[in-house]
Image 1 (cartoon, one colour):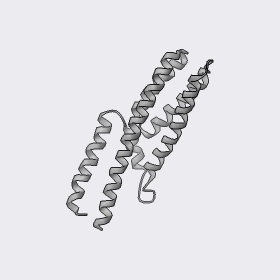
Image 2: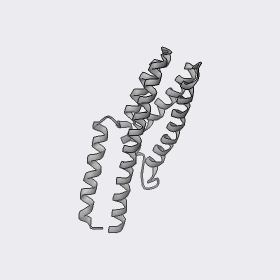
Image 3: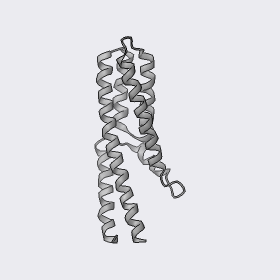
Image 4: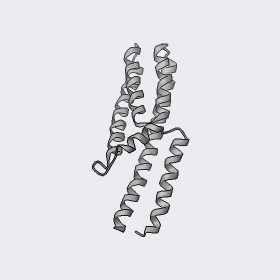
Length: 151
């Protein structure tokens, strides 16, 4: 691939990344995560985020099941939300983190409707951030592939 193709690809990646921060999908924690990645561990961010995706999907499933019971264990529900809040914060998934805060408030208030509404919001934000990060990683891979074909 021509070196001239690299410049627009990199520009696209930078613009897309900036948009993720401007739209509140990511925060400074994501930058810190990226700074931990180096040549000895080039897939660090992808690996950490993939673990987050797996963990989040398991937690969202558990939250869905917990809220489907007639008798809801709000302490257990809150523990799951707290876990999701922490893991989303650790990768910089700011919008999921924010929804988890209101979700936890609904758990404390034992507000079933609030919990159900928050669960839907968390699922929506999770789906959005997953799609956005997968797109980001594909863009990075495209640049890496282009760089290797130049070398």
